[in-house]
Image 1: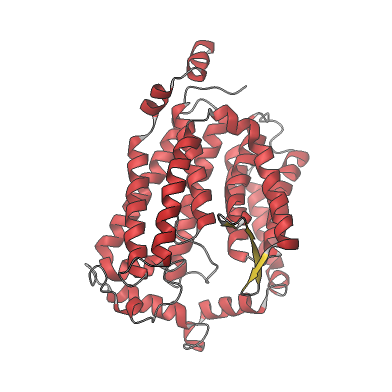
Image 2: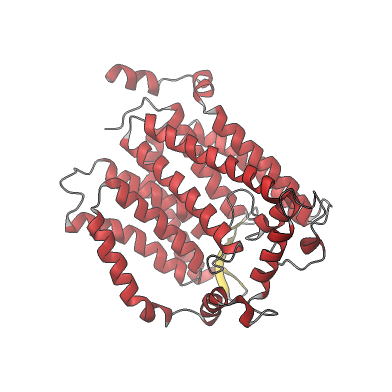
Length: 374
């Protein structure tokens, strides 16, 4: 074990490059290329703001992902709590000095990028809990103190994000955190008790929702109650996806998006535009790329000797899965609109940055898969 650990910590640059997961890298790169063409389509077949901005972010964040991957997995283990607390401080800063837009206060202007710290917390909570459960003895996992500490790590950022308000991101942070608790060995009975408690508390929770959030839930239950208002977006999304048929209308030929029937097509509803232009077959191909990415991440976690790397990879794979399921369910009318971007495909610098950091740490786990962390 010492021999393998010593060799792993002394990997040369070329050995690190050799140890990269090239199937995962190619899949991510392919997704990046597709996203640029789809963004080009959202700009009406012209290289306008969204296309330029999305392409520039990819040019910065994809190499950043590679740089992150070259750090030893021990580095991410050591800095996990620091990473988490920095994001907590950023969330507090946002609540006081953040930029306001459309009734929400979620962003910090860093000049080079308008940062949304809540997106980074999706990665921060996985890192933090992976480190927490890494060295926790199995007998202590289900103790009151351990569960309380873990839940506090999840609840604190959720409260800060809900205050922005951002219900969608808070749900995704909660999902990412809870899966680590389950992977860490927390008994299923605690999840069942929590679920029952949540159902009982639901009416009380709904009373604290903002008016637009309540309207989204009512619109989800009956989109036709306000077809020209709150229900307009989801109705147009369904029409666009359905009109794509099996093979789609063709690249740059999506009528719903080009005739401006489809709002927010460059962000949360990017899949709708893609599905209209490339149809069922194109949508299946896109989902296959995501499936390959998730499978490769799970495989990296499975071969990693470090429990920290395993927990992070499995947690991040689940998080990517949840992001995709929530986004697709949202645009298909199976879930209320909660503002969940499709990884890499949707426009948004903070979301892409968080996703690329996650991929970078996964690749670091692959390069150092023989590394053990005491």
